[in-house]
Length: 400
Image (cartoon, rainbow, N blue to C red):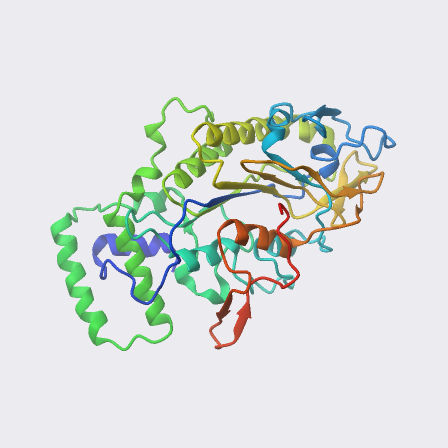
């Protein structure tokens, strides 16, 4: 059952105790992550590595702009003003040119077999496991998904750690409705607690109880307020779907959400006519990201928020159709925070191969984990009682 469906059933008459006794949380902090997937494999050459002196088929046809000591593609003039808060990683690579499995790798730090489903938990699910799926005080979910991304579920961690789907139905079900008032809801909770006390609930039964507890926390708390964009009628983010998602991401981390995953889904799989595709799609990305970073900065949230722009792979030289094909030998990774480090890593002169000291999804995993205060030696037992080492011993924090 989807969490939004479950929440609806709880609002109509299921429930449990307010606490979640089978879980234990790390001490809370103000750290958070906003992870933005540029779906389709955005061309690093046209975004973060324009190489003006390369032959025409290798350099960006969109020109370039100075971001304060390094270059971005010419479409990203607003982002270029944020160089002090930006880290461009030009040596990120993962040898997988399949959209689905490369995306899963960057969501989980593990290789996945095509068409075999998700085998490892997402970063968001891991953080939900360490900090509880939702705040005991406000009920706000600690892991929220704004549009689905391959690899964004909890896998063997269990369904209690799946992210909250923030679609229209999911937001509606954060509050009591259909004539169920608070008193009636409390009566139903007491009835359900009697069932839970007398039932044998091993395995999935425990997960079910925990899901009920999370749903009650959300309904009784003020989580729904965070999702109410009508409270910002004159939003600087505009009315596009991407802009509204970015605004919601800011509202969520401002109120305690730990991890927000966001799918841009703008159309970056440009096998043909890439120049026209960037002319249409890049301005929305440039304006949206620069608005988000400026807004976070002005509100004092960027000090503790790590914003990640990433894609599953980059792209090749211009092909016969005026586009670029899949290239997993380099990638697009941009990190925003209180202090940027400019450019990390390099490619060959044609922008096609990451050179020297390269980074992988395992390094991205530890960069997120370290930011969130997790232990490098963290080990979790899976549902077969096998210990799983979450981070690789040789994984590095890209920002260190």
